[in-house]
Image (cartoon, rainbow over all chains, first blue to last red; front, side, top):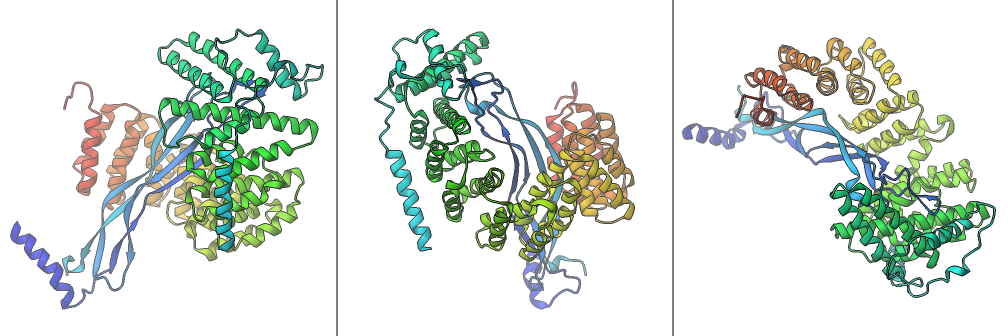
Length: 139
Length: 477
């Protein structure tokens, strides 16, 4: 086992120096940060029936209607000088979370309790890649 | 740059001055008897008078507060009392305390002048990181007092035509807003965005916020919302013609400040007759800016007529990149599902635009219009990425039986599972199915999936975690 690892490691360092592989795709991983999109500001005052001195109060907390989170992952991109290739090794979930405003009847009830998660679903998946030296590709 | 530095100094000084202003309401309670007398017309002025009448009829709290700070302490105490009653499931008590809070706010407004300015002043002095129950309650109380005062002033303006008092308070809010992110969100997004309060006299202050957002990124979202609101208000009130604003937006369309540019392109895109659509699309294409394309896509999905929105989204897709228009399609799916369905069917018939078809299936399927389009996509669409999107919808939004059947069909589909990332997608879809709460169904699918030769190690670990969380009764660990 150890022998196998040593051979693979040596090959990884030495073979690129001895010339490129014909089938090397010359790809490298392309780190991509977390992407968070929030949409819609729900009126989360939870105070549809509240008026003070005859004035309807509608104070909003910033509660989004939906949030879409794409976690950080390693994408892939061409890199002609790289002598490496990339393969997908895991999957990240693009998750949509919807929020709702729980109705409160109280004027001064703390804001934090009124913006609640309604549902959370995976709406898409994207591959995350790892990078290997082309010397490891079968000839 | 020099202008910006000057502005930053002015804003900084403005905040310091605003927050350091003597709070005139603290020690000068108004004589209730001098309040305006009630009259027969329900004018805005009578609001406070009615409040005063109710005050005299209400049961007075012991040790009446006199200063603004004392009133706020009283209201925070009532907020905490309400919370305690709710936590003890004593809703009768909570309602009773809440009624006392309403009376207290009315009394405070009747007895003290300009409570909204005092509330803004106090909000400036709050520690933004104070997330204790008392800290949250205090922020809410002050925000409520500020909003109430703002709305009363607006009512008076609508009655009298003099908006000076509204303008002065809004100006103070704009000056205070850059202090920190919670205050910016409370004042900007909570009280000023999508409201009628911003007017012609606030153009300079809003544009200065846009400028400052270059250096303070937390302001970008607020500044975009305020500039958009300001332009809408100016147009709706007739203070600026749509031609004036379009000319301004055309100037800003190539601006180096991204907030100004996004606002300008959004404004042009939604201008009447769609006359600037081509211009906006050209600018986005030239920019190759994915974030800009996403922002314009959201505007299109929210505000354009559905067919125009779909046309715009189709043009944006190459710039936005894979999967970054999902939020736009979800918004449009809620707003105009029939248009999405028709567009999908046309594209499927023509066998074109698979990336858009995938977004349409997601947008329609995760709206409130059912899962039938996803069923059609899973069974008939030849594109495997579209099938993948349909899988997520069916696992989440259909019945457990249909969801389970679809996942098993995907596992048995050699073409679908040829790519190991799509086997990982089945694990993710199983997570959606698990939300139905049927652990037996989850385990039946999970067992089949676990022995799939294309399952990657990382996805196998996710699957094992999922199965451990959803153990059928009697199976044990």
